[in-house]
Length: 152
Image (tube, rainbow, N blue to C red; front, side, top):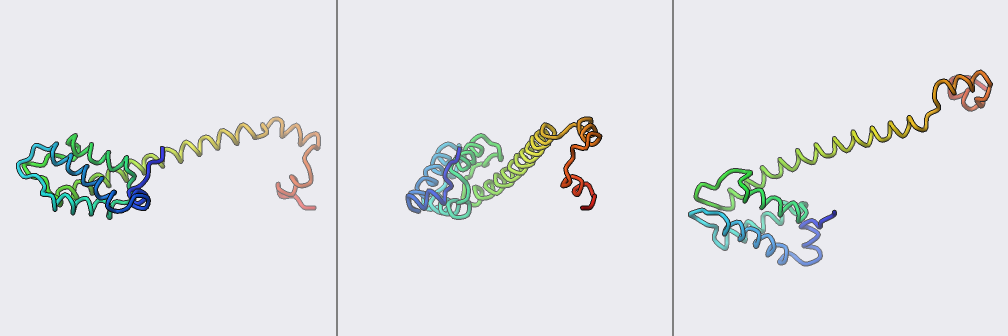
């Protein structure tokens, strides 16, 4: 599935809609966390601005995944306070984890593609015993003989 990036959401719906959506995610996190000092409205707005600007290349599913992982404690506890700096620090950890996951995915995909290509080439290849028989029967063309190092 191709989910839109935050930049695409901003392009279609405007910056206010994007910031409001991120702010709602932050508000939900703020309400979810059992911390003594919750983020003030201005802090939530600033965090929404930073996330939407600095991480606009993330698609909306990745942003939702970030907040899910924060809520599940993947990146640790808040120890009584949730603020913008702490949230941005957690976002950096998420981005590092994302980079590793993407690198692993693309490495695996590259290996699978290479294996698929190898199997395809093997299926299309002329078996050595048939090639030897063709050589004996003189069925190779002049072009192939040039390819194999002969001359015209």
